[in-house]
Length: 66
Image 1 (cartoon, rainbow, N blue to C red):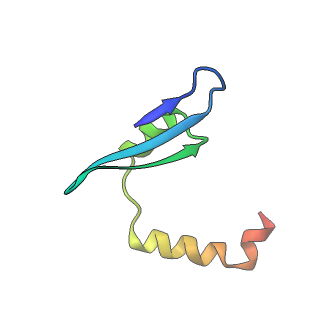
Image 2 (image 1 turned 120 degrees about the vertical axis):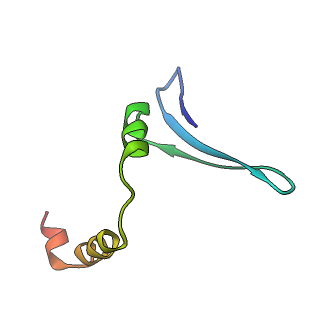
Image 3 (image 1 turned 30 degrees about the horizontal axis):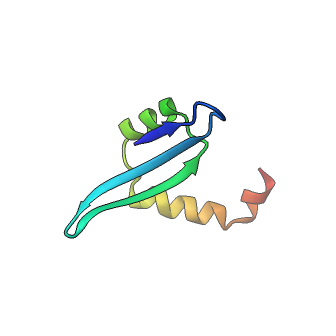
């Protein structure tokens, strides 16, 4: 679920799950708008190779130059 505060316009995302002993939730404050979340929901999942390449890039000297 995605919520936007009517007063401060902050965004909040929450996952609500049925658990064996009730309901579980995980939530976080985010800077993603509802339209951003929709785009991500429809996007293709990352591949393992893309995750590895991203990790390599973040840990390379070139990352700090950008």
